[in-house]
Structures are given as C-alpha cells and as structure tokens.
Image 1 (cartoon, rainbow, N blue to C red):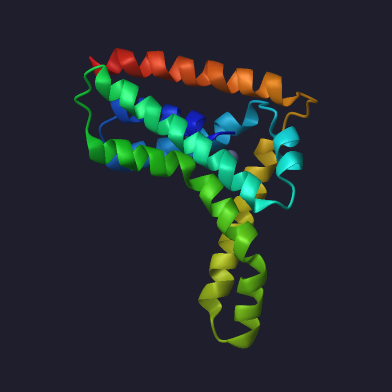
Image 2 (image 1 turned 135 degrees about the horizontal axis):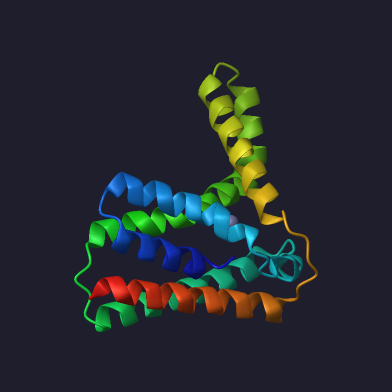
Length: 172
Ligand SMILES: [Zn+2]
C-alpha cells in the first residue's frame, strides 16, 4: 500500500488524538490494519521484481503525492501540531520502512554477525526485524484476491479521500 494512504490515516489520527505516544502507537497499528484491505500490491511487486530503480520511482511519486496532500491540508488553513504530524507519519510508515531495512540488510547482517559472533545485539535486531516482517506479511496477504492494480489503486484513492475528509473535519 502506498505510504500516502498510511500517512493520510496517521495524519487523521494526529488530529483526533493529542498524546504523542498514542499518536505514534495508533498510527503504527493502523498500518497493519490498513494493509489487510486488499489493495493490488501483487501486480506492483511483480513489476518491481528485482529492479530497485522501479521501487525508487514509485516511492518518488508516492512521496510527491504525500507532499501535495500535506500542502492541500495546510492550504485549507491547518493549525495542526507539526510534531504530532511528523510522529504520525513516521508511525504510519514504520512497518514498510522496517520491512525494507530487513529486505536490504538481511544478508549483510548475517555476514556481519558471523564475523563478530559476540554481537548478540545484531541477533536481537535481526530477530525483531524478522518477527515484524512475518506479522506485516501475514496481515498483508491475509485476504487473498486477484485484484489487479487498477482496482488496487482505486481502493487506495478512496481511502485517501476518506481520510482527507475525516481530517478536514478535525482541522477546523
Ligand atoms: Zn505495509
């Protein structure tokens, strides 16, 4: 699911809740819940395949859309707490960031660990990243559908619009 969708949900939470810790935890939790909704990622993952450039391009578009989204919210006259906003976006995006770190570093971590066998901490971090990835993946593929990318993107647009209007209510 695009970061913009997760972030728009997090931003909504940051408007509805005022405690930084709660904003972080609820935004984090919302990521796993949203990922359960089928959103056509399979097509996208296949297209990206082993070409990180494609992932980079998609993320560049994704983050640009998020910047526009934030721009529109502020243009609407937001008086929102920037710190809470940032916390909510980090929380909402964290599972994907952690899974990507694991994806990119699992081999180097293993080599590193073999070289410095004493580093229990690495094993702990690796264990945590593996566990996080298992939970993330399980929820992500919980509902099996053959939804194509058109259906998937439509669902994600609907979700962003929904969170936008919910957020706009709280911005006033
Ligand atoms: Zn995710």
